[in-house]
Length: 263
Length: 295
Image 1 (cartoon, one colour):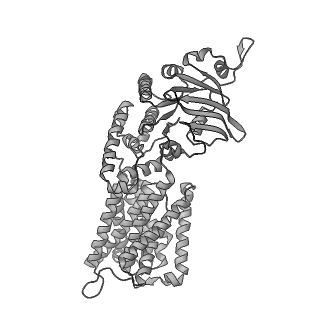
Image 2: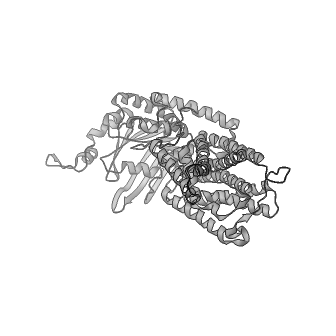
Image 3: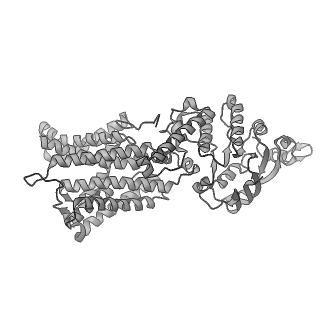
């Protein structure tokens, strides 16, 4: 299987604070990989680095075999990479449905919009249909006509996924998709993500919810202090020595010395 | 009375063009342009200068559109790395710069005297300006601009710039390039404003640097805010309303025995009170932006 995403010796520091210190990992095409680690270990920074929101100091990031570090966010998005945000903020003066439709970025030129040629009209039609389907899939049909800023935090997360799915990405990076989502929707979200993966989309998911991880992911990468400390199956997490160490600290004399914060 | 009403209606149409143009930038793209009047001024001067060299009016209007678009392009590029409030100050500076050039370059713009004798577009049999014909032209221009603005704001381009206005980070993550979007919105807006400026030059048969005073920009802003930022129809209504208040003050002056000296202040004061009332009672304007349920 080919490699969809590869990070090699990635360094990033903010002032004197080194967040990523020689990070290495790769994700194969078609995988669902969970990205874990205690708070502050650099998970969100990894996502920001891959998507060009925060340029790295050193190292290599490849998507689909092509280096993307140094490119700007929209150029990386053009390579079929989409992401969601940990704390999504949504427009106040656009409806949920319109935000999803706005995520269709093809052919948004002045002239095509003004003239509405046949091609633009059929694209609009296609966009509307796809938005409708995605809203249904992500259980947002009921709120489709409400201002996007007015829906709950969990629904905003789902809306973020709907937007990211609009142009059928190759690689989808989700930043804590479960946080704030109503517990009743949990199993449906797992099903949805599996279905998205079934369409050939590679998923990288940052998440703290272990049950969710073990239900959804095929592999886990655990970060601590800006490095990969474990690359294992979800079922091996609890027994993996460095994972336990990352979350609970080093064991000395039968007691854990707490280093990271337990999420 | 008929000719007075026609005069008010014609000016309303010209200001409606300015309002629609400003709304495209400020209302939909969220670009705070405080130097907006420069576009109208460039259009007006371009028309006046080309017609003083004997070229026909359509050439002047076209030349104005191109010149205003160039100014718009540089204004938008100027702001590519500036936060919106800093960009607003920068646009104010650009407009003042252009006004100062117009005030001082006598050979080109006639300096403080401006350019008078800009030919009328339509003449009646007696040789004076044919006001009804001009009004119809201005009305047709508003109709075309309104149609274009409605289409742009509702279509794919409009969704892109509205998403950029509210959530730029989300827009980039989806693959939108913000700077070209800003440039496109500004340049289109400049073109529409320039047509309005050209019409004003031909209608008044005069262009002067006072056309580009910063206060003019804020009159247009007032129209947009009273009518409804982000609503094309609201903006047209706002232009009509503010122009009507402007024109009604001279009548009120006679009725209330206000001296001519303070009539100008009363005018501005009335507009200010209406704006303040509007902001307090209907912050979104008379016709607020519609949150589109279906497109």
